[in-house]
Image 1: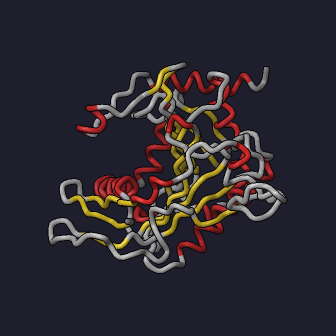
Image 2: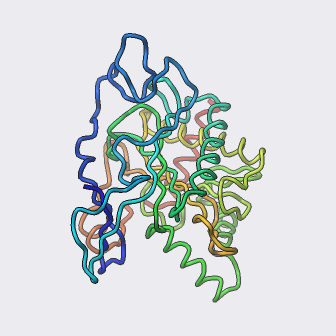
Image 3: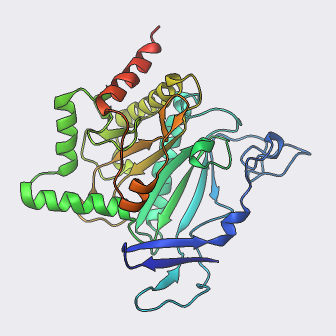
Length: 328
């Protein structure tokens, strides 16, 4: 079963994909499906003994290029739709261990070019409204395969989070006549206390209203719609800052740091102005301190209101200190 079911109370689509219960869960290293296939060894998703980066369709997709018909009938109140879309896996390296921080700078630059290419190509497909590029890292966030990789989901609708961001930006423009994203970035830069690092093209900071202790947003200084609008200098700076940020996370507690990395960019066929949003990355982690995790409990799940146990200004200072460790 794979279908979209509409929740009229929350006004959101829910993907029901029962076949995903059969996914491989933490296989032994010799049976990792994201490693290269070696002669005489386990046949993986990548049928060659070596590669740089690899992109392929997810074997257990939530969304399908050719979606099956829904298994149930919807109603006027609760409609059902085919789960059309794209689910791809992006493998960063043939090495089983590692992270964005341990890749070469050239490999991370290449990864960004791959993201650009997939955004362009998938955008041309019929029925696609939003392309989400993301990475889940660590068993703490539910990762089933530890091999360094990310994913790309292309939806037939604009998901609730980016849709709310864009609606907020439209409302702000109508009231203030300015870009909400640009004003938020300017306010963070002017305050300075939550800035972690910056370059001529990018700024990384713990947001003023962070929901997670070590939440970090990485904004393009220019108001860009998508990765495809980056110039060469911005690509190189982005690669360096992604590496620095992940390495900084790992230095916090001298261990691989779990996180979700989400790329927010323009919906497919977006109009002008606030319909395009503002290119930025958002990092979320369940870690709130050494040996302490944050779980989404009653207040977060039941009311939609987050409780952050730490001051964003303090956590930004901790992250800056971890950046300084590199110089020691």
